[in-house]
Length: 55
Image (cartoon, rainbow, N blue to C red; front, side):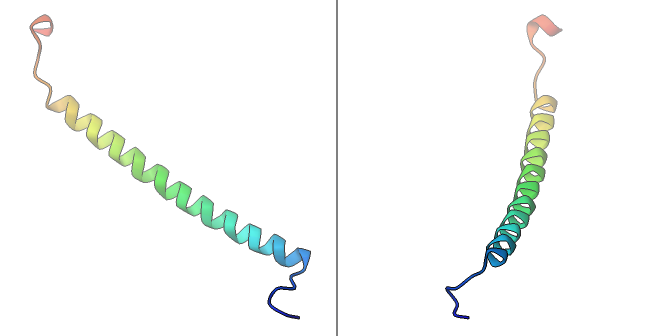
C-alpha cells in the first residue's frame, strides 16, 4: 500500500486524531482566556477609586 492509498478507516482515524487535538487546544484556550478575564476583572475592580456618587 502506498502512502497516498488510504482506506476509509485510515481517514476516520486521522479525523479522530485531529478532533482530539482540537479539543485539547480548545480546552487550554478556554482555561487561559478565563484566567486572563478573571484576573484582569479582579485587578480592575480593586484598583477602582470610589466616585463621588458612591461615597
